[in-house]
Structure formats: structure tokens, C-alpha cells
Image (cartoon, rainbow, N blue to C red):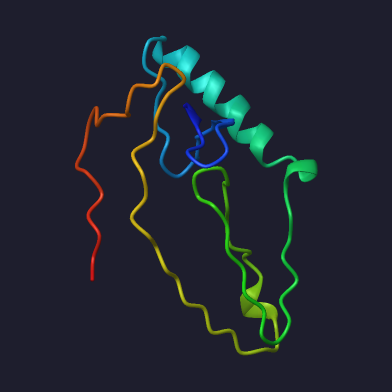
Length: 113
């Protein structure tokens, strides 16, 4: 869950409620409690930003170090929004020990053209 950012060398928390399911090496109950704590922590107001869109706005972020969620209030706005998503194939996460991340369960992410 802690990885080294390939550009900055900083330690970053790589945890996401949509993808992180369990912490290996601890009991299922411990894993659940730790993840609940982390998921709550990353959504605290002092760690969040609400992007204020304006004509011509462009927003981008580094998925390696950012948890993000789209707002749920677009339906109530009296504007037309056109959103394009671009996903780039990234690097393999590297842990604090320098070891590359490996798949434990599931299938690897496949890029679609």
C-alpha cells in the first residue's frame, strides 16, 4: 500500500476504496479496520479539493498519488458538460524495498484501444 513515486522518490499511500480490498499479512478484521481508517482519512476535507469548472477548463491528476471521485451533482447544474477520459499505461508500482509489485489475485489491467 505504500509505494515509491517514480518521479519524486517520495513515499505515497496507494489505497483506493474502489480497488483496495484487503491488506495481506493481517487478519481480515484488522484489514477491514485499517482500511476503514485509511478510507476515512483520505476523504477528510483538508485533503480534498473541489475543482471549479469554467469554459475551457482542463483538469488532470497523477493517479499514482491521488484518490479522486467525480461529484454527484452534475445532474442539477444547468450546463452542458463534455468529459473526455484518457488513461495512460503506467509504471509498475515499486515498494519501499525496491521490489516491483506483483499480481496476487485477479487479472492484470488490459488497455483498450
